[in-house]
Length: 636
Ligand SMILES: *[C@@H]1O[C@H](CO)[C@@H](O)[C@H](O)[C@H]1NC(C)=O
Ligand SMILES: [Zn+2]
Image (cartoon, rainbow, N blue to C red; front, side):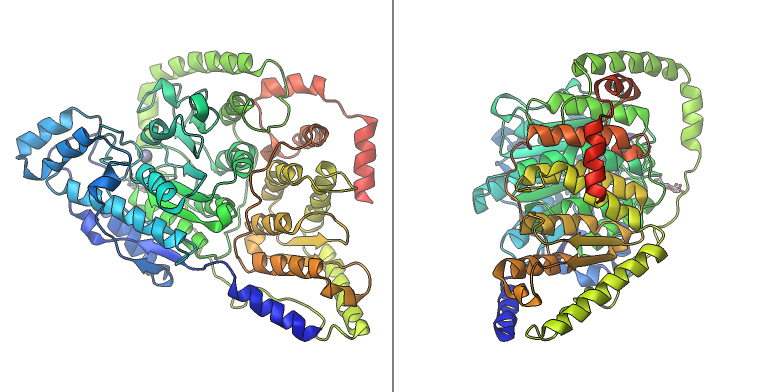
Protein backbone atom coordinates (compact mmCIF):
# COMPACT_ATOMS: atom_id res chain seq x y z
CA UNK A 1 0.00 0.00 0.00
CA UNK A 2 2.74 2.51 0.77
CA UNK A 3 4.31 1.92 -2.59
CA UNK A 4 0.99 2.60 -4.22
CA UNK A 5 0.94 5.83 -2.27
CA UNK A 6 4.41 6.73 -3.44
CA UNK A 7 3.37 6.05 -6.99
CA UNK A 8 0.46 8.39 -6.65
CA UNK A 9 2.67 11.17 -5.30
CA UNK A 10 4.94 10.78 -8.29
CA UNK A 11 2.01 10.90 -10.62
CA UNK A 12 0.81 14.12 -9.11
CA UNK A 13 4.19 15.77 -9.32
CA UNK A 14 4.28 14.94 -13.01
CA UNK A 15 0.95 16.56 -13.73
CA UNK A 16 1.68 19.42 -11.34
CA UNK A 17 0.86 22.87 -12.69
CA UNK A 18 3.44 24.75 -14.68
CA UNK A 19 5.86 26.75 -12.63
CA UNK A 20 8.05 29.77 -13.10
CA UNK A 21 7.55 33.47 -13.63
CA UNK A 22 8.20 35.22 -16.93
CA UNK A 23 9.82 38.63 -17.12
CA UNK A 24 9.32 40.30 -20.48
CA UNK A 25 11.48 43.36 -20.99
CA UNK A 26 13.67 45.00 -23.58
CA UNK A 27 15.62 48.23 -23.31
CA UNK A 28 14.45 49.04 -26.84
CA UNK A 29 11.21 50.37 -25.30
CA UNK A 30 13.14 53.19 -23.58
CA UNK A 31 14.07 54.72 -26.94
CA UNK A 32 11.51 57.49 -27.19
CA UNK A 33 10.77 60.55 -25.08
CA UNK A 34 9.02 63.90 -24.96
CA UNK A 35 10.66 66.27 -27.44
CA UNK A 36 8.94 69.52 -26.48
CA UNK A 37 7.72 71.28 -23.33
CA UNK A 38 4.47 69.84 -21.97
CA UNK A 39 3.95 69.87 -18.19
CA UNK A 40 1.24 67.21 -18.43
CA UNK A 41 3.55 64.74 -20.20
CA UNK A 42 6.93 65.36 -18.64
CA UNK A 43 6.53 62.62 -16.03
CA UNK A 44 6.38 59.80 -18.59
CA UNK A 45 10.13 59.21 -18.93
CA UNK A 46 12.25 56.30 -20.25
CA UNK A 47 13.81 55.90 -16.79
CA UNK A 48 10.52 54.43 -15.60
CA UNK A 49 11.54 51.21 -17.31
CA UNK A 50 15.24 51.25 -16.51
CA UNK A 51 14.80 51.89 -12.77
CA UNK A 52 12.21 49.13 -12.54
CA UNK A 53 14.40 46.62 -14.33
CA UNK A 54 17.53 47.62 -12.43
CA UNK A 55 15.69 47.21 -9.13
CA UNK A 56 14.59 43.71 -10.15
CA UNK A 57 18.23 42.88 -10.93
CA UNK A 58 19.56 44.36 -7.71
CA UNK A 59 17.03 42.43 -5.63
CA UNK A 60 18.08 39.22 -7.38
CA UNK A 61 14.57 38.79 -8.76
CA UNK A 62 15.29 39.22 -12.47
CA UNK A 63 17.64 36.24 -12.53
CA UNK A 64 15.00 34.03 -10.89
CA UNK A 65 12.53 34.83 -13.68
CA UNK A 66 12.31 33.16 -17.06
CA UNK A 67 13.47 35.84 -19.47
CA UNK A 68 11.13 35.99 -22.45
CA UNK A 69 12.16 37.91 -25.59
CA UNK A 70 9.87 40.57 -27.02
CA UNK A 71 8.61 40.84 -30.60
CA UNK A 72 6.72 43.31 -32.77
CA UNK A 73 2.97 43.07 -32.96
CA UNK A 74 1.50 42.50 -36.41
CA UNK A 75 -1.08 44.78 -38.03
CA UNK A 76 -3.70 42.08 -37.57
CA UNK A 77 -3.00 41.98 -33.83
CA UNK A 78 -3.24 45.77 -33.52
CA UNK A 79 -6.53 45.69 -35.41
CA UNK A 80 -8.01 43.40 -32.73
CA UNK A 81 -8.68 46.58 -30.73
CA UNK A 82 -8.09 49.49 -33.12
CA UNK A 83 -9.47 50.89 -36.36
CA UNK A 84 -7.62 50.70 -39.67
CA UNK A 85 -7.76 54.50 -39.99
CA UNK A 86 -6.06 55.00 -36.64
CA UNK A 87 -3.37 52.39 -37.33
CA UNK A 88 -2.63 53.96 -40.72
CA UNK A 89 -2.39 57.40 -39.10
CA UNK A 90 0.06 56.21 -36.42
CA UNK A 91 2.11 54.41 -39.09
CA UNK A 92 2.97 57.79 -40.60
CA UNK A 93 4.44 59.21 -37.37
CA UNK A 94 8.01 57.85 -37.84
CA UNK A 95 8.36 60.01 -40.94
CA UNK A 96 6.95 63.22 -39.48
CA UNK A 97 8.91 66.37 -38.68
CA UNK A 98 8.85 67.75 -35.16
CA UNK A 99 6.14 70.25 -36.11
CA UNK A 100 4.04 67.60 -37.79
CA UNK A 101 4.35 65.37 -34.72
CA UNK A 102 3.17 68.20 -32.46
CA UNK A 103 0.20 68.89 -34.68
CA UNK A 104 -0.64 65.20 -34.87
CA UNK A 105 -0.42 64.94 -31.07
CA UNK A 106 -2.81 67.84 -30.53
CA UNK A 107 -5.86 65.92 -31.69
CA UNK A 108 -5.51 63.59 -28.69
CA UNK A 109 -5.51 64.16 -24.93
CA UNK A 110 -2.40 64.07 -22.71
CA UNK A 111 -0.12 62.09 -24.96
CA UNK A 112 2.98 62.81 -27.03
CA UNK A 113 4.39 61.28 -30.20
CA UNK A 114 8.00 60.69 -31.20
CA UNK A 115 9.50 59.27 -34.41
CA UNK A 116 10.26 56.00 -32.56
CA UNK A 117 7.05 55.63 -30.53
CA UNK A 118 5.22 53.57 -33.17
CA UNK A 119 8.08 51.06 -33.08
CA UNK A 120 8.03 50.95 -29.26
CA UNK A 121 4.22 50.68 -29.15
CA UNK A 122 4.39 47.61 -31.41
CA UNK A 123 7.01 46.13 -29.08
CA UNK A 124 4.86 46.86 -26.02
CA UNK A 125 1.99 44.88 -27.55
CA UNK A 126 4.36 42.15 -28.71
CA UNK A 127 5.84 41.88 -25.20
CA UNK A 128 2.35 41.52 -23.75
CA UNK A 129 1.42 38.83 -26.28
CA UNK A 130 4.67 36.97 -25.61
CA UNK A 131 3.67 36.92 -21.96
CA UNK A 132 0.22 35.56 -22.82
CA UNK A 133 1.78 32.83 -24.97
CA UNK A 134 4.25 31.85 -22.23
CA UNK A 135 1.49 31.57 -19.64
CA UNK A 136 -1.10 29.90 -21.87
CA UNK A 137 1.29 27.28 -23.25
CA UNK A 138 2.42 26.43 -19.72
CA UNK A 139 6.01 27.56 -20.25
CA UNK A 140 5.56 29.61 -17.09
CA UNK A 141 2.83 29.95 -14.49
CA UNK A 142 2.60 33.75 -14.48
CA UNK A 143 4.65 36.79 -15.34
CA UNK A 144 5.13 40.49 -15.80
CA UNK A 145 5.78 42.59 -18.88
CA UNK A 146 7.64 45.87 -18.31
CA UNK A 147 6.48 47.93 -21.25
CA UNK A 148 6.34 51.47 -22.59
CA UNK A 149 4.18 53.11 -23.92
CA UNK A 150 1.42 52.00 -21.55
CA UNK A 151 -1.97 51.05 -22.96
CA UNK A 152 -5.10 51.31 -20.85
CA UNK A 153 -6.20 54.82 -21.96
CA UNK A 154 -5.83 54.11 -25.66
CA UNK A 155 -9.07 53.78 -27.59
CA UNK A 156 -10.21 52.28 -30.86
CA UNK A 157 -9.29 55.36 -32.86
CA UNK A 158 -7.41 57.53 -30.41
CA UNK A 159 -4.18 57.82 -28.48
CA UNK A 160 -4.72 59.09 -24.95
CA UNK A 161 -2.93 59.54 -21.63
CA UNK A 162 0.60 58.44 -22.76
CA UNK A 163 -0.96 55.38 -24.45
CA UNK A 164 -0.77 54.65 -28.19
CA UNK A 165 -2.22 51.14 -28.50
CA UNK A 166 -4.19 49.30 -25.84
CA UNK A 167 -1.76 46.51 -24.90
CA UNK A 168 -4.03 44.67 -22.48
CA UNK A 169 -7.22 45.03 -24.53
CA UNK A 170 -5.41 43.59 -27.55
CA UNK A 171 -3.97 40.81 -25.40
CA UNK A 172 -7.41 39.90 -24.01
CA UNK A 173 -8.83 39.65 -27.54
CA UNK A 174 -5.77 37.66 -28.60
CA UNK A 175 -6.01 35.21 -25.69
CA UNK A 176 -9.70 34.58 -26.36
CA UNK A 177 -9.06 33.96 -30.04
CA UNK A 178 -5.81 32.03 -29.83
CA UNK A 179 -6.56 29.85 -26.83
CA UNK A 180 -10.32 29.63 -26.91
CA UNK A 181 -10.63 31.19 -23.47
CA UNK A 182 -14.15 31.78 -22.24
CA UNK A 183 -13.65 34.33 -19.47
CA UNK A 184 -10.97 36.96 -18.93
CA UNK A 185 -10.59 39.16 -15.86
CA UNK A 186 -8.75 42.49 -16.16
CA UNK A 187 -7.81 44.12 -12.86
CA UNK A 188 -6.71 47.72 -13.35
CA UNK A 189 -5.06 48.95 -10.16
CA UNK A 190 -3.51 51.97 -11.86
CA UNK A 191 -4.69 55.20 -10.21
CA UNK A 192 -6.32 56.38 -13.45
CA UNK A 193 -9.43 54.96 -15.02
CA UNK A 194 -8.53 52.75 -17.97
CA UNK A 195 -11.42 54.10 -19.99
CA UNK A 196 -9.91 52.55 -23.14
CA UNK A 197 -10.29 49.06 -21.69
CA UNK A 198 -13.79 49.84 -20.43
CA UNK A 199 -14.89 51.06 -23.90
CA UNK A 200 -13.34 48.00 -25.55
CA UNK A 201 -15.36 45.48 -23.54
CA UNK A 202 -18.39 47.41 -22.30
CA UNK A 203 -20.91 45.10 -23.95
CA UNK A 204 -18.83 41.93 -23.67
CA UNK A 205 -19.71 39.52 -20.83
CA UNK A 206 -16.63 37.39 -21.50
CA UNK A 207 -14.30 40.13 -20.24
CA UNK A 208 -14.78 41.40 -16.71
CA UNK A 209 -13.05 44.76 -16.25
CA UNK A 210 -12.34 46.13 -12.78
CA UNK A 211 -10.81 49.54 -12.21
CA UNK A 212 -10.33 51.71 -9.18
CA UNK A 213 -9.30 55.25 -9.86
CA UNK A 214 -8.85 58.70 -8.43
CA UNK A 215 -12.09 60.41 -9.41
CA UNK A 216 -13.04 63.17 -6.95
CA UNK A 217 -16.56 63.36 -8.35
CA UNK A 218 -15.35 63.74 -11.90
CA UNK A 219 -12.83 66.37 -10.83
CA UNK A 220 -9.79 64.27 -11.77
CA UNK A 221 -8.51 63.33 -15.23
CA UNK A 222 -9.95 61.95 -17.51
CA UNK A 223 -13.01 63.61 -15.88
CA UNK A 224 -15.49 61.22 -17.44
CA UNK A 225 -19.02 60.59 -16.28
CA UNK A 226 -18.46 57.00 -17.48
CA UNK A 227 -15.81 56.40 -14.80
CA UNK A 228 -18.32 56.48 -11.96
CA UNK A 229 -19.61 53.47 -10.06
CA UNK A 230 -22.86 53.30 -12.02
CA UNK A 231 -21.15 52.50 -15.33
CA UNK A 232 -21.65 48.76 -14.96
CA UNK A 233 -21.44 47.77 -18.63
CA UNK A 234 -24.00 47.69 -21.41
CA UNK A 235 -26.46 45.21 -22.87
CA UNK A 236 -25.10 41.67 -22.56
CA UNK A 237 -22.09 43.12 -20.78
CA UNK A 238 -24.14 44.69 -17.98
CA UNK A 239 -22.49 43.79 -14.68
CA UNK A 240 -19.11 43.06 -16.27
CA UNK A 241 -17.63 46.53 -15.79
CA UNK A 242 -16.73 47.53 -12.24
CA UNK A 243 -15.65 51.08 -11.47
CA UNK A 244 -14.58 52.01 -7.97
CA UNK A 245 -14.16 55.79 -7.83
CA UNK A 246 -11.84 57.26 -5.18
CA UNK A 247 -13.47 60.53 -4.30
CA UNK A 248 -10.63 61.61 -2.05
CA UNK A 249 -6.86 61.33 -2.29
CA UNK A 250 -4.72 59.75 0.44
CA UNK A 251 -6.25 56.25 0.24
CA UNK A 252 -4.29 53.72 2.29
CA UNK A 253 -3.56 50.01 2.33
CA UNK A 254 -6.78 49.32 4.26
CA UNK A 255 -8.86 51.07 1.61
CA UNK A 256 -7.29 49.04 -1.19
CA UNK A 257 -7.71 45.74 0.65
CA UNK A 258 -11.32 46.55 1.55
CA UNK A 259 -12.22 46.98 -2.09
CA UNK A 260 -10.58 43.64 -2.89
CA UNK A 261 -12.46 41.86 -0.07
CA UNK A 262 -15.87 43.44 -0.50
CA UNK A 263 -16.06 44.14 -4.23
CA UNK A 264 -13.48 42.58 -6.51
CA UNK A 265 -12.80 39.14 -5.05
CA UNK A 266 -16.42 38.04 -4.47
CA UNK A 267 -17.27 38.99 -8.05
CA UNK A 268 -14.06 37.51 -9.46
CA UNK A 269 -14.69 34.16 -7.74
CA UNK A 270 -18.27 34.11 -8.92
CA UNK A 271 -17.08 34.93 -12.45
CA UNK A 272 -14.22 32.39 -12.37
CA UNK A 273 -11.84 33.67 -15.04
CA UNK A 274 -9.64 31.42 -17.20
CA UNK A 275 -6.95 34.09 -17.34
CA UNK A 276 -6.22 37.21 -15.29
CA UNK A 277 -4.58 40.37 -16.58
CA UNK A 278 -3.41 43.11 -14.28
CA UNK A 279 -3.17 46.62 -15.71
CA UNK A 280 -0.31 47.12 -13.30
CA UNK A 281 0.02 50.85 -12.87
CA UNK A 282 1.87 51.93 -9.76
CA UNK A 283 0.79 55.56 -9.70
CA UNK A 284 -1.64 54.26 -7.06
CA UNK A 285 1.33 53.90 -4.67
CA UNK A 286 2.57 56.43 -2.15
CA UNK A 287 4.70 59.32 -3.38
CA UNK A 288 3.23 59.38 -6.85
CA UNK A 289 2.81 62.89 -8.24
CA UNK A 290 -0.37 61.87 -10.11
CA UNK A 291 -2.15 59.68 -7.60
CA UNK A 292 -1.48 61.34 -4.24
CA UNK A 293 -2.46 58.08 -2.57
CA UNK A 294 -0.82 56.67 0.56
CA UNK A 295 -0.78 52.91 -0.07
CA UNK A 296 2.73 51.55 0.42
CA UNK A 297 4.62 49.42 -2.14
CA UNK A 298 4.21 46.22 -0.10
CA UNK A 299 0.44 46.35 -0.64
CA UNK A 300 1.06 45.18 -4.21
CA UNK A 301 2.48 41.95 -2.83
CA UNK A 302 -0.89 41.30 -1.20
CA UNK A 303 -2.99 42.43 -4.14
CA UNK A 304 -0.96 40.09 -6.35
CA UNK A 305 -1.24 37.26 -3.85
CA UNK A 306 -5.01 37.59 -3.63
CA UNK A 307 -5.32 37.35 -7.42
CA UNK A 308 -2.93 34.40 -7.72
CA UNK A 309 -5.53 31.87 -6.65
CA UNK A 310 -7.82 32.72 -9.58
CA UNK A 311 -7.64 31.09 -13.02
CA UNK A 312 -5.42 28.30 -11.73
CA UNK A 313 -2.70 30.90 -11.17
CA UNK A 314 -2.56 32.18 -14.77
CA UNK A 315 -1.78 35.84 -14.19
CA UNK A 316 -0.22 38.35 -16.61
CA UNK A 317 0.80 41.69 -15.10
CA UNK A 318 1.46 44.44 -17.62
CA UNK A 319 3.00 47.77 -16.60
CA UNK A 320 0.84 50.86 -17.05
CA UNK A 321 1.55 54.08 -15.09
CA UNK A 322 3.77 54.88 -12.09
CA UNK A 323 5.71 58.15 -11.98
CA UNK A 324 7.60 58.28 -8.72
CA UNK A 325 10.65 56.29 -9.74
CA UNK A 326 11.35 55.19 -6.16
CA UNK A 327 7.91 53.87 -5.31
CA UNK A 328 7.49 52.50 -8.86
CA UNK A 329 10.62 50.36 -8.62
CA UNK A 330 9.74 49.12 -5.13
CA UNK A 331 6.20 48.25 -6.16
CA UNK A 332 7.35 46.38 -9.28
CA UNK A 333 9.71 44.32 -7.09
CA UNK A 334 6.92 43.50 -4.62
CA UNK A 335 4.69 42.32 -7.45
CA UNK A 336 7.30 40.17 -9.17
CA UNK A 337 8.51 38.64 -5.91
CA UNK A 338 4.97 37.54 -5.14
CA UNK A 339 4.57 36.10 -8.61
CA UNK A 340 7.76 34.13 -7.90
CA UNK A 341 6.05 32.69 -4.82
CA UNK A 342 7.99 34.24 -1.96
CA UNK A 343 6.02 34.74 1.25
CA UNK A 344 4.09 38.00 1.40
CA UNK A 345 5.33 40.67 3.82
CA UNK A 346 3.64 41.25 7.15
CA UNK A 347 0.81 43.77 6.92
CA UNK A 348 0.69 45.83 10.04
CA UNK A 349 -1.64 48.54 11.22
CA UNK A 350 -4.56 47.72 9.02
CA UNK A 351 -7.86 49.10 10.14
CA UNK A 352 -11.16 50.06 8.61
CA UNK A 353 -11.32 51.96 5.34
CA UNK A 354 -12.01 55.69 5.47
CA UNK A 355 -15.56 57.03 5.19
CA UNK A 356 -15.14 58.12 1.58
CA UNK A 357 -13.85 54.68 0.56
CA UNK A 358 -16.74 53.04 2.42
CA UNK A 359 -19.22 55.15 0.52
CA UNK A 360 -17.64 54.15 -2.78
CA UNK A 361 -17.71 50.48 -1.77
CA UNK A 362 -21.35 50.75 -0.80
CA UNK A 363 -22.26 52.47 -4.06
CA UNK A 364 -20.44 49.93 -6.22
CA UNK A 365 -21.99 47.03 -4.35
CA UNK A 366 -25.48 48.36 -4.74
CA UNK A 367 -24.92 49.19 -8.42
CA UNK A 368 -23.79 45.60 -8.97
CA UNK A 369 -26.37 43.99 -6.75
CA UNK A 370 -28.55 42.98 -9.72
CA UNK A 371 -25.68 41.06 -11.34
CA UNK A 372 -23.70 39.41 -8.55
CA UNK A 373 -24.49 37.55 -5.36
CA UNK A 374 -23.76 40.20 -2.78
CA UNK A 375 -25.18 39.92 0.69
CA UNK A 376 -28.59 41.57 1.07
CA UNK A 377 -28.27 45.35 1.11
CA UNK A 378 -28.12 46.70 4.63
CA UNK A 379 -30.62 49.41 3.89
CA UNK A 380 -33.15 50.19 1.20
CA UNK A 381 -33.18 51.85 -1.17
CA UNK A 382 -29.42 51.95 -1.34
CA UNK A 383 -29.09 53.92 -4.58
CA UNK A 384 -30.91 56.80 -2.96
CA UNK A 385 -28.29 56.80 -0.26
CA UNK A 386 -25.49 56.80 -2.82
CA UNK A 387 -26.95 59.87 -4.44
CA UNK A 388 -27.28 61.46 -1.03
CA UNK A 389 -23.69 60.74 -0.13
CA UNK A 390 -22.69 62.06 -3.51
CA UNK A 391 -24.45 65.35 -2.97
CA UNK A 392 -22.90 65.90 0.42
CA UNK A 393 -19.49 65.02 -0.91
CA UNK A 394 -20.04 67.36 -3.83
CA UNK A 395 -20.64 70.25 -1.47
CA UNK A 396 -17.50 69.36 0.42
CA UNK A 397 -15.52 69.10 -2.78
CA UNK A 398 -16.59 72.56 -3.81
CA UNK A 399 -15.56 73.86 -0.45
CA UNK A 400 -12.17 72.25 -0.65
CA UNK A 401 -11.53 73.73 -4.06
CA UNK A 402 -11.48 77.15 -2.49
CA UNK A 403 -8.63 76.04 -0.31
CA UNK A 404 -6.60 75.00 -3.29
CA UNK A 405 -3.70 77.12 -2.11
CA UNK A 406 -3.41 74.94 0.98
CA UNK A 407 -3.70 71.79 -1.06
CA UNK A 408 -0.83 72.88 -3.27
CA UNK A 409 1.33 73.53 -0.29
CA UNK A 410 0.62 70.04 0.95
CA UNK A 411 1.56 68.69 -2.45
CA UNK A 412 4.98 70.25 -2.25
CA UNK A 413 5.71 68.51 1.02
CA UNK A 414 7.82 65.46 0.50
CA UNK A 415 6.16 62.19 1.40
CA UNK A 416 8.42 59.68 3.08
CA UNK A 417 7.99 55.97 3.46
CA UNK A 418 10.20 53.05 4.38
CA UNK A 419 11.66 50.81 1.75
CA UNK A 420 9.86 47.47 2.16
CA UNK A 421 12.11 45.11 4.13
CA UNK A 422 13.54 42.26 2.10
CA UNK A 423 11.38 39.18 2.01
CA UNK A 424 13.45 36.10 2.61
CA UNK A 425 12.12 32.76 1.55
CA UNK A 426 13.04 30.07 4.09
CA UNK A 427 15.35 27.34 2.73
CA UNK A 428 12.69 24.68 3.28
CA UNK A 429 9.34 25.70 1.91
CA UNK A 430 7.03 23.03 3.30
CA UNK A 431 7.40 20.04 5.53
CA UNK A 432 4.87 17.28 5.89
CA UNK A 433 4.61 15.12 8.96
CA UNK A 434 3.24 11.78 7.83
CA UNK A 435 3.61 8.41 9.43
CA UNK A 436 6.66 6.90 7.76
CA UNK A 437 5.01 3.52 7.50
CA UNK A 438 1.31 3.65 7.22
CA UNK A 439 0.99 -0.03 8.02
CA UNK A 440 1.88 0.59 11.64
CA UNK A 441 -1.07 2.17 13.38
CA UNK A 442 0.66 3.07 16.63
CA UNK A 443 3.33 5.04 14.81
CA UNK A 444 0.68 7.12 13.21
CA UNK A 445 -0.96 7.68 16.53
CA UNK A 446 2.25 8.93 17.92
CA UNK A 447 2.67 11.48 15.15
CA UNK A 448 -0.84 12.69 15.56
CA UNK A 449 -0.56 13.16 19.25
CA UNK A 450 2.69 15.02 18.94
CA UNK A 451 1.01 17.36 16.48
CA UNK A 452 -1.73 17.91 18.99
CA UNK A 453 0.95 18.81 21.43
CA UNK A 454 2.49 21.30 19.02
CA UNK A 455 -0.90 22.89 18.53
CA UNK A 456 -1.53 23.14 22.22
CA UNK A 457 1.89 24.57 22.80
CA UNK A 458 1.48 27.21 20.12
CA UNK A 459 -1.83 28.27 21.50
CA UNK A 460 -0.05 29.57 24.51
CA UNK A 461 3.05 30.86 22.87
CA UNK A 462 2.07 32.54 19.63
CA UNK A 463 0.30 35.62 20.83
CA UNK A 464 -1.77 35.95 17.70
CA UNK A 465 -2.81 32.40 17.11
CA UNK A 466 -5.85 31.35 19.01
CA UNK A 467 -8.30 33.88 17.70
CA UNK A 468 -7.52 33.13 14.10
CA UNK A 469 -8.49 29.56 14.65
CA UNK A 470 -11.50 30.58 16.58
CA UNK A 471 -12.78 32.96 13.93
CA UNK A 472 -11.83 30.61 11.23
CA UNK A 473 -14.08 27.91 12.48
CA UNK A 474 -16.75 30.47 13.14
CA UNK A 475 -16.85 31.66 9.56
CA UNK A 476 -16.91 28.21 8.11
CA UNK A 477 -19.62 27.06 10.45
CA UNK A 478 -21.85 30.00 9.89
CA UNK A 479 -21.98 29.89 6.15
CA UNK A 480 -21.99 26.20 5.54
CA UNK A 481 -24.84 24.06 6.75
CA UNK A 482 -23.32 21.58 9.20
CA UNK A 483 -24.89 18.62 7.48
CA UNK A 484 -23.57 18.92 3.96
CA UNK A 485 -21.23 21.84 3.48
CA UNK A 486 -21.69 21.37 -0.22
CA UNK A 487 -22.31 25.01 -0.96
CA UNK A 488 -18.94 26.23 -2.20
CA UNK A 489 -20.39 29.60 -3.17
CA UNK A 490 -21.40 30.31 0.42
CA UNK A 491 -18.11 29.07 1.77
CA UNK A 492 -16.09 31.28 -0.56
CA UNK A 493 -18.23 34.32 0.24
CA UNK A 494 -17.53 33.76 3.91
CA UNK A 495 -13.83 33.33 3.28
CA UNK A 496 -13.54 36.45 1.14
CA UNK A 497 -15.88 38.83 2.97
CA UNK A 498 -15.49 37.64 6.58
CA UNK A 499 -12.44 35.52 7.17
CA UNK A 500 -9.86 37.38 5.06
CA UNK A 501 -10.70 40.92 6.23
CA UNK A 502 -10.78 39.78 9.82
CA UNK A 503 -7.57 37.83 9.55
CA UNK A 504 -5.73 40.64 7.76
CA UNK A 505 -6.71 43.14 10.40
CA UNK A 506 -5.84 40.71 13.16
CA UNK A 507 -2.40 40.20 11.61
CA UNK A 508 -1.56 36.74 12.98
CA UNK A 509 1.94 35.42 13.51
CA UNK A 510 0.87 31.96 12.41
CA UNK A 511 -2.08 30.50 10.59
CA UNK A 512 -3.23 27.14 11.80
CA UNK A 513 -5.52 25.30 9.43
CA UNK A 514 -7.39 22.39 10.90
CA UNK A 515 -9.46 20.13 8.74
CA UNK A 516 -11.45 17.78 10.82
CA UNK A 517 -12.96 14.55 9.57
CA UNK A 518 -16.23 14.91 7.72
CA UNK A 519 -15.93 18.66 7.28
CA UNK A 520 -17.67 18.26 3.97
CA UNK A 521 -15.62 21.03 2.40
CA UNK A 522 -14.38 19.97 -1.01
CA UNK A 523 -10.74 19.54 -1.90
CA UNK A 524 -10.57 22.41 -4.37
CA UNK A 525 -12.17 24.76 -1.87
CA UNK A 526 -9.64 23.71 0.77
CA UNK A 527 -6.83 24.37 -1.64
CA UNK A 528 -8.26 27.83 -2.35
CA UNK A 529 -8.57 28.64 1.35
CA UNK A 530 -5.05 27.38 2.05
CA UNK A 531 -3.66 29.51 -0.78
CA UNK A 532 -5.53 32.65 0.15
CA UNK A 533 -4.54 32.41 3.82
CA UNK A 534 -0.89 32.20 2.94
CA UNK A 535 -0.88 35.94 2.37
CA UNK A 536 -1.00 36.18 6.17
CA UNK A 537 1.68 35.63 8.79
CA UNK A 538 4.41 35.87 6.13
CA UNK A 539 3.16 32.57 4.82
CA UNK A 540 3.70 30.72 8.11
CA UNK A 541 1.03 28.07 7.90
CA UNK A 542 0.52 24.90 9.84
CA UNK A 543 -2.04 22.60 8.30
CA UNK A 544 -3.49 19.76 10.30
CA UNK A 545 -5.44 17.14 8.45
CA UNK A 546 -7.41 14.85 10.67
CA UNK A 547 -8.61 11.61 9.16
CA UNK A 548 -11.58 9.63 10.35
CA UNK A 549 -11.17 6.04 11.48
CA UNK A 550 -7.96 4.16 11.80
CA UNK A 551 -4.71 5.57 10.42
CA UNK A 552 -4.94 2.96 7.70
CA UNK A 553 -7.79 5.02 6.27
CA UNK A 554 -5.37 7.63 5.07
CA UNK A 555 -5.03 5.38 2.07
CA UNK A 556 -8.61 6.17 1.26
CA UNK A 557 -8.48 7.94 -2.10
CA UNK A 558 -10.50 10.89 -0.99
CA UNK A 559 -8.23 11.73 1.90
CA UNK A 560 -5.23 11.16 -0.26
CA UNK A 561 -6.43 13.67 -2.84
CA UNK A 562 -7.15 16.09 -0.07
CA UNK A 563 -3.67 15.63 1.31
CA UNK A 564 -2.27 16.24 -2.13
CA UNK A 565 -4.18 19.47 -2.61
CA UNK A 566 -3.22 20.65 0.85
CA UNK A 567 0.39 19.88 0.22
CA UNK A 568 0.41 21.42 -3.24
CA UNK A 569 -1.17 24.63 -2.11
CA UNK A 570 1.19 24.89 0.84
CA UNK A 571 3.99 24.59 -1.68
CA UNK A 572 2.56 27.58 -3.51
CA UNK A 573 0.94 25.74 -6.40
CA UNK A 574 -2.13 27.59 -7.60
CA UNK A 575 -5.34 26.12 -6.32
CA UNK A 576 -7.55 24.58 -8.99
CA UNK A 577 -10.32 26.85 -10.18
CA UNK A 578 -13.69 26.30 -8.55
CA UNK A 579 -15.58 27.13 -11.73
CA UNK A 580 -18.26 29.82 -11.88
CA UNK A 581 -19.92 29.93 -8.47
CA UNK A 582 -23.64 30.45 -8.34
CA UNK A 583 -25.35 32.46 -5.67
CA UNK A 584 -24.99 31.17 -2.11
CA UNK A 585 -28.13 30.04 -0.33
CA UNK A 586 -30.14 33.02 0.90
CA UNK A 587 -30.15 31.74 4.47
CA UNK A 588 -26.34 31.45 4.44
CA UNK A 589 -26.04 34.97 3.06
CA UNK A 590 -28.27 36.27 5.77
CA UNK A 591 -26.38 34.48 8.52
CA UNK A 592 -23.10 35.81 7.18
CA UNK A 593 -24.45 39.31 6.97
CA UNK A 594 -25.69 39.17 10.54
CA UNK A 595 -22.28 38.01 11.72
CA UNK A 596 -20.50 40.68 9.70
CA UNK A 597 -22.81 43.32 11.13
CA UNK A 598 -22.02 42.23 14.63
CA UNK A 599 -18.26 41.90 14.20
CA UNK A 600 -17.69 45.07 12.21
CA UNK A 601 -17.76 47.24 15.32
CA UNK A 602 -14.50 45.58 16.38
CA UNK A 603 -13.03 44.86 12.98
CA UNK A 604 -12.99 47.83 10.65
CA UNK A 605 -12.03 45.82 7.59
CA UNK A 606 -15.39 44.06 7.81
CA UNK A 607 -17.22 47.27 7.06
CA UNK A 608 -18.65 47.65 3.60
CA UNK A 609 -20.91 50.67 3.93
CA UNK A 610 -20.75 54.27 5.09
CA UNK A 611 -21.78 55.35 8.57
CA UNK A 612 -25.29 56.27 7.54
CA UNK A 613 -25.91 52.79 6.23
CA UNK A 614 -24.47 51.19 9.32
CA UNK A 615 -26.83 53.20 11.47
CA UNK A 616 -29.79 52.22 9.35
CA UNK A 617 -28.78 48.58 9.37
CA UNK A 618 -28.56 48.37 13.14
CA UNK A 619 -32.30 48.61 13.10
CA UNK A 620 -32.63 45.87 10.52
CA UNK A 621 -30.23 43.40 12.07
CA UNK A 622 -30.28 43.00 15.77
CA UNK A 623 -28.68 40.16 17.62
CA UNK A 624 -31.14 37.39 18.06
CA UNK A 625 -31.15 34.42 20.33
CA UNK A 626 -30.73 32.25 17.26
CA UNK A 627 -27.39 33.91 16.46
CA UNK A 628 -26.13 33.31 19.94
CA UNK A 629 -27.05 29.68 19.65
CA UNK A 630 -25.17 29.42 16.38
CA UNK A 631 -22.11 30.97 17.96
CA UNK A 632 -22.20 28.72 20.97
CA UNK A 633 -22.49 25.64 18.83
CA UNK A 634 -19.52 26.74 16.79
CA UNK A 635 -17.38 27.34 19.79
CA UNK A 636 -18.01 23.80 20.77
C1 LIG B 1 9.32 60.32 -5.17
O1 LIG B 1 9.23 60.32 -3.76
C2 LIG B 1 10.42 60.71 -3.11
C3 LIG B 1 10.20 60.58 -1.63
O2 LIG B 1 9.14 61.40 -1.20
C4 LIG B 1 10.79 62.13 -3.50
O3 LIG B 1 12.03 62.47 -2.94
C5 LIG B 1 10.84 62.25 -5.01
O4 LIG B 1 11.02 63.58 -5.35
C6 LIG B 1 9.57 61.73 -5.64
N1 LIG B 1 9.68 61.75 -7.09
C7 LIG B 1 8.71 62.17 -7.86
C8 LIG B 1 8.96 62.11 -9.33
O5 LIG B 1 7.65 62.60 -7.42
ZN1 LIG C 1 -2.08 55.97 -14.39
